[in-house]
Amino acid sequence: MSSTDDGPAPRAVFRVSPLVVLVALAFAFCATPFAFGAPYLWLIYLLPLGMIVWTLRVRTVADPEAVTVRSLVSGRRVPWSEISSLRLGNRTRVSAVLTDGAELPLPAVHVRHLPQLSAASGGRLPDPAGE
Image (cartoon, rainbow, N blue to C red; front, side):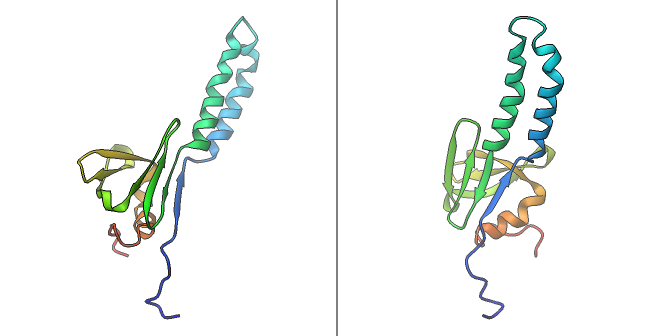
């Protein structure tokens, strides 16, 4: 195989750090003395449970055909042909600008992930690092 034949573009999955689950479990452990101090204070356990569900659910998957964005309650698959560019937001967040002008936030994708996103697009997005 020659160096010009790279094969199919890789699939890239961007997720929230799994350390958030550890933080949520630590919060639940520390909240235990307070959770049973009065009626309905056990509802404080909903906060770490929500953090865990959010961490396991939210992601962005980029493959050669499309970008799939999964949020806490919904998901959306957008073909690369409908993405005109990327917008770099504050705090290193990245959004896809669609051909109709709308923006689609890409959860868990940061500026440092742009070369991986470029590789997964199969050349549809240029690599900003120029590599």
